[in-house]
Amino acid sequence: MKNYIFIVFASAFLFLSGCASQPEGKGQDQYAHAVDPYEGFNRTMFGFNNGVDTYFLKPVAQGYQFVMPDVAETGVSNFFSNLLEIRNIINSLLQGKGEKAANSTGRFLFNSTIGLAGLFDVAGGIGLEKQDGEDFGQTLGAWGVESGSYLVLPLLGPATVRDGVGIPVDMYLDPVNYHDQSSVRDKLTALKVIDIRAGLLDAEKLITGDKYVFMRDAYLQRREYLVKDGEVKDTFGSDVEGDF
Image (cartoon, rainbow, N blue to C red):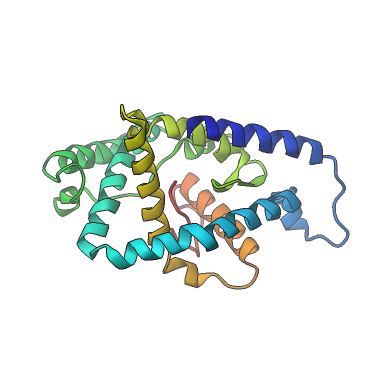
């Protein structure tokens, strides 16, 4: 999986470097061109990803949601959410957010022990509420790195140049990738992806109009909201952004 991440970025950036000098389309919306200069490439990747989702991932997620009892589905979501606290802790510290790092540390310790490896969110019951996640893309943004152009990556979905650079770093902070047995790693990764997709089944009903444009604008607005810690308005909320 790690090698796949690097191959995806290398291929995408090599392709886009060859497209960088292409002229702006006649009558093209100025805002769209400013944030999405590689729209042709992105729409192609979006179509590919949408096809994989329509014919494989979504049906699997629907089946998963159908057969899994609600309590078990919640437990799985809690388990992976608890593992993400490690990423939250490190990126919060890198951004100088000591209080948020402490909250994530407390959540991880309580949920990993009393909460049975994170299956139960006992930390939330004692006042350590789950907060918006932190990743390395947000850390780069907090350090002043501009977001760069919007990108849609094969299988990985929406990103920006800045967020794309952060993905491999976040992969290294995922404890799942350090399990000794590759078969277990692959199964846990597959379960995580299915769980995330199942959590978005209701949210996708909010999508209207051009699905590509909706997802692009929702992603960019949500990322700006997260990087600026809520100082800008986010009309889409977190429902349209899966946390891979």
